[in-house]
Length: 166
Image (cartoon, rainbow, N blue to C red; front, side):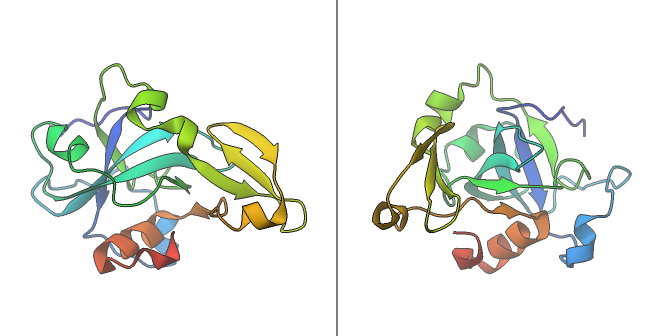
C-alpha cells in the first residue's frame, strides 16, 4: 500500500490493532507494515498546526481499508473535530486517500468549528480560525482546546467512550 503526504484534506487511517500504552505515542512506526484487512478508523486532516495540534475530524466508518474514500466520507462524523499531536510525525496514522479539491470551509464546515482558549476569567473563543473575547457565561457553551495523543483517540474509538475527548 502506498501512503500519501501529510496534506490538508487527506484521509488517514487510525490502526485500532496497535498497543495503546502512552509510551507507544513516542515510537516511530515508519518501518511498520499495516495489513489493509485489519480494523481501522478513519479521519481527515482539516488544518496543519505543528505548534498547537493538527485539527482533524474522525468519521463513523470503522473497518478494513476500502477501495476508495466514498464510504468513509459518506459515513458522517463520529464526534466534533479535535486537535492531535504525534500521530503523523511518528507515522502511526497514515494518509491513504486524497479529497479532490478539498475546501475546509465547505467539506469540513470550518467556520463553525469552535474551541475555548484562555482561562476561565478571560475566555477567548476560537471559531473558524478567528479569535474573539467572550463572557464567562458564554464560555460554558464551548469545549476547551485540548491537544490529544493518538492512543487516547484510538482507545476512545475502541471503547466507544468519547467522554475523554469531547
